[in-house]
Image 1 (cartoon, rainbow, N blue to C red):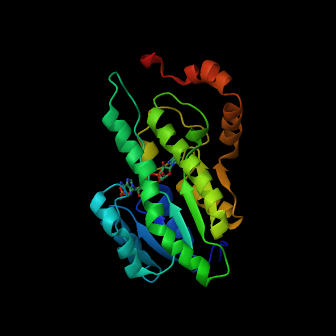
Image 2 (cartoon, helix red, strand yellow):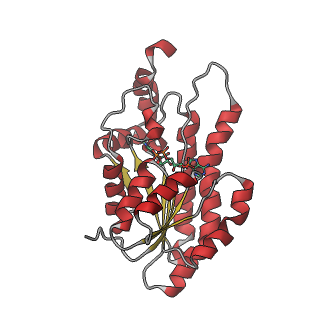
Image 3 (tube, protein in one colour):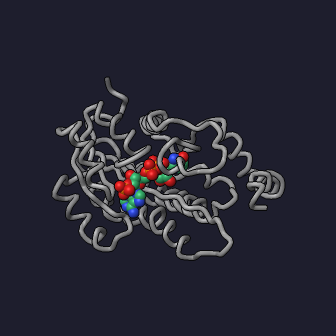
Length: 261
Ligand SMILES: NC(=O)c1ccc[n+]([C@@H]2O[C@H](COP(=O)([O-])OP(=O)(O)OC[C@H]3O[C@@H](n4cnc5c(N)ncnc54)[C@H](OP(=O)(O)O)[C@@H]3O)[C@@H](O)[C@H]2O)c1
């Protein structure tokens, strides 16, 4: 059965776990060839063992200089074009204080923001080649987060890195329009993955990774500019974005854990 994304060459980062891994299972079901990236080769290999014909492994650390120096040529050994780029690699760390630790801020910004920049840099020629050879538009999908819509306690750098991705991709959407490349920003709420399993606070409307992957693919088929889910959290945080002062003064402080006040 097809899910609407079919016969595409897809490059997917963050494929070894969570939302990215769930996307792999859904993409292979509709005759796509998926180049799967992450740092952990053993996790990627176990996916290839399941779908040997449909996947190729491209190990990639999105922040490592050596990995970035070779990624385009290693991608070129697998394919000469990419129809769909899905950038799902990401990390989350919270500012738990009491000391301000700039190295933690750099770590998160490097993976989430510079990792997106580095991946885009490597993929762009392959996306433009797809444009020349195919009638359909190439498609870039960047996984941001609903945390980019509103301020949360301890999420200083995670939220900032995702807001930076939003801004980067909105600019790219304008700049790449003339090249015929479509851009989608995905903003999940809470999804039950290793990234959130360490969270120590309530996660309303939490979804399973396969539900998140279905929502992403459904939005990609429609070439939506934004794919925000779940809708309940989207309503709350869209209001927070419209009324930031009210959110920061009245709602945000209520989310701070009692013991940290
Ligand atoms: N789960 C949620 O509630 C939620 C909500 C909003 C947004 N998101 C975003 O969704 C994306 C996927 O997150 P997830 O929840 O599925 O988390 P996850 O299960 O921890 O997966 C993170 C993925 O990113 C890869 N990754 C991390 N650092 C990397 C690096 N330096 N280079 C290359 N790959 C790297 C990991 O692979 P390796 O460790 O093998 O490299 C893994 O495949 C992230 O961008 C996250 O910010 C998640």
